[in-house]
Image 1 (cartoon, rainbow, N blue to C red):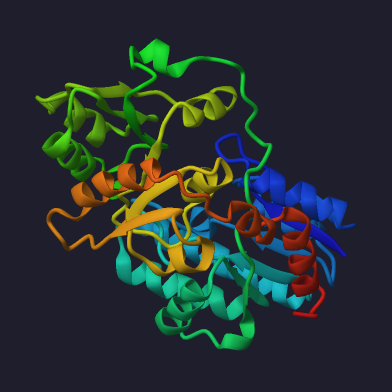
Image 2 (cartoon, rainbow, N blue to C red):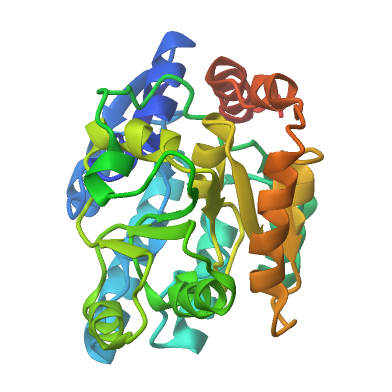
Length: 343
């Protein structure tokens, strides 16, 4: 049995590399299914092999309706070919829908069709499993919950002092938003909430590459006092030092299924502020997250203030217990069992 993984690795996220390495350590042969070459490469897969795709929409989506439909037909034909060859198609559903959807009905139709063609579907939580069952009519027997692994030891410290480089004192209270800056991630709400309560000794770092829409918004923000904008892709070698320099990580996302950024914060044992959702209950324990109701106008502001109180109480959450459940070797064995039909 070979596993044809798309993507096998990623320059933007260590998730796929960690998954691939752990599956290889579990005795699986993992091949690289390259972007844009799916229809060409699947011809090499044999009966019993696995084609495992993560972000399925890249295979059929397009902003042009005609091209969307043509790509969709080609992809459906590819799935029919795989089925005839008795190659298992496995999909890890990271999000119920892509973050950007232009043709919602077509998107829902394609995802429903894909679910029918897939031998197995992987999701990272019970809450996502329930949503997939309801949205796409998938039977529970086809869905398998496999948690998102941790990032322990992945990002190594380089000894860079981010507080000094940003001009922030060691005594200051610092919040961090880290990652690609897009509208659905709630950065506008974050800035508004921070400006409502900030003091001379509180800072907000927004670090990551902004898309054009958010870059334009950030230029228009008038009150940037104590807000550090580091608008670039943060290189992997800088991630550990940056996270270590802050007190609280804030993730005010408008849409959350499973958050790799939250698991990154968990891996660094950082207190997190995020909207209340089922994902929190499945991945975190007491005093690891301060949640808020996103429909509450002052919810984010109050949660950010409450997070500092939690930090000052010097509590010791059970991080080791939680991170043990997210060990990659256990995750790889679970996925291997799913591949082999043991569930």
